[in-house]
Amino acid sequence: MQIHFRVEFLIKEGQLDEFKKLVQEMCTLVKEQEPDTISYQFYLDVENTKCIVNETYKDSNAAFVHMNGIAIQTIFPNIFKISRITKFDVYGNPDKDLEKMLVDFNAQIYNQFAGFTR
Image (tube, rainbow, N blue to C red):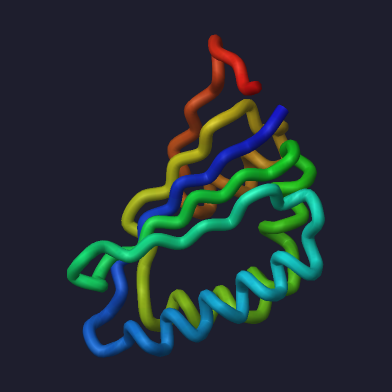
């Protein structure tokens, strides 16, 4: 079952260009290194102070691989220096290993109970 993340970042004043640069580096690494990342999309609000990230993973294992991947290990710490997560929602039914990891990010988990994907 697919796992979806929706993460909101607040970007520190004067750090937009650096934030964009780091995000581009992350996107490149994730695309090259994580074939089970289905979608990895970043959106800026009109004030360029908030970024919303929508991520879709093939399954819990793919999300777990991402959370332990080189992009998160090497670039994400630099993103945390210039921004902070204000909201982290997880949609799907993460397995216990992924769920434990998400607790460290104060993620709110929404388990799917109905619906379909075409």
